[in-house]
Length: 154
Image 1: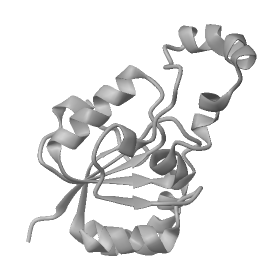
Image 2 (image 1 turned 90 degrees about the vertical axis):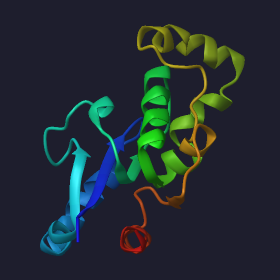
Image 3 (image 1 turned 45 degrees about the horizontal axis):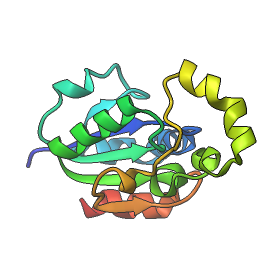
């Protein structure tokens, strides 16, 4: 049986779910190595350009979407993936990364130069606000048991 082709990408967040995933590898590496081919995961290995990928079975998305480049990558990921799973609070709800969406006008004006300098959009979006997701794993960091259940599901 062929291995499941899996991707993991991080957008705007603290990457706490990535760290938790790497810790999970201490317990599950040999089990998962037999079943999963990580075709994209920068924290594990040098990855190709996201736009070189095709036919991914499951893509895990960590982090909120804060600029047009992230949105474009996310839309491409959806187009090449059978299933997309939002991982962690930022991906699932946008928060806490999306706090600036609720700033008053004075505060928004104070940060405007930084947003422009780093090509950030005025509002931060959750993954489901941009694309259809098939599952979500909540938490900050993600809930470990919920993640394992989702991984096993696919």
